[in-house]
Length: 321
Image 1 (cartoon, rainbow, N blue to C red):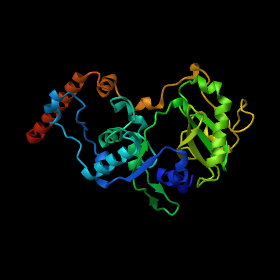
Image 2: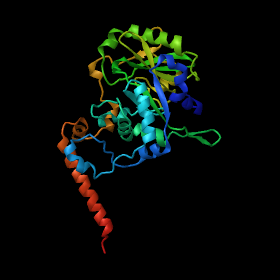
Image 3: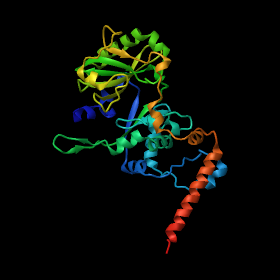
């Protein structure tokens, strides 16, 4: 995979090309002090996440620093996009952090919501710490981190598909949420496949900067197809129901699909698998905390943490002789 293929899949590079065929978005540069905060290993306490009666306990912990100018810019962008947004960086979105949100959603209405998701996401941390791309001349290229705010839209997972393009030819389409079974895909297979092929030939083919790439689409209830994201054609991108060996060869065999790209999806509930993001989640007690189902667990947790901090400070002040 060439460096250019990764660079071209940055949101800020492909969005201007396909702006008419994707969700309205705004791109903001991330200040260095915000990046430093996102990478800081500190406890983040969000105001209003527990009853006001416990403010005294909350105040004993380090709260998120304030970024008034950046916060104002972000709020202005959120309002311009309707008041609710989906946040991401140059490449990655915090899809592994929805467990931390009060409603288990990636919907954000404030900078605090964005911070909560970003600081809880391994995907975001990877973008901020390992996004440098080595060059053939030995010199690496490191992108400037950007905050991407996309207008919030309720996307049904069963309507998302990943499409693989080799030499500007659509060779394969996979159900995006391949761990679940969606009956409508089985019933509408031909219509879905044809809609994606038409979208590709009319709006994507020969328009992207590379001839090998992967793009994600969403087919809404009216049958319209929307471009959601673009990714490099290679193992850094999840091949879902295909293998990279067959995709690289360009000879994807699908006996059910005679014409057009191979189209694979979960065909029955028997083949349903656990979500890959489950490995990023935490114990049930913490799920209760994030869902607001048991505030007393949160209070006990904060009291315990405070007590441990005080004991640690005492040990530092009075080291053993």
